[in-house]
Amino acid sequence: VQLQASGGGLVQAGGSLRLSCAVSGRTLSGYTMGWFRQAPGKEREFVAAVSSSGARTYYADSVKGRFNISRDNVKNTVYLQMNSLQPDDTAVYYCAGEGPLGNYDYWGQGTQVTVSS
Image (tube, helix red, strand yellow):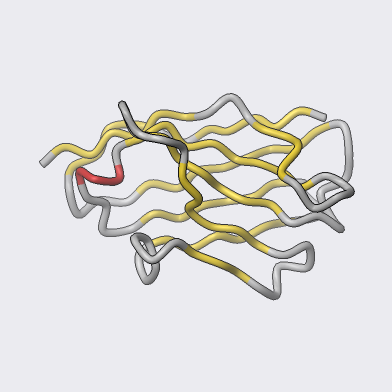
């Protein structure tokens, strides 16, 4: 199973980015998918997750109302739309997929998001 994250970059505060995570090696449907991030000197933290059907979404308080997670099970891809970005959102963003026991067993390589003030 491979997860390939893309879409990161440099953006000014208040701007937007859309991250994508393409999954190969297994079908995306049936598993919860999530996004995490890790800023320099900090631990990795949860950002958002979407249920297998896409009907339920979950967000960290710090991104609620600004970020939107979605998925396309036909394209085997998960997205993270990030709006009103702030310098505190600067981090490496990772997509992750749940395994059969409900843990995040599969991880992408990460994509850098840098927000300038």
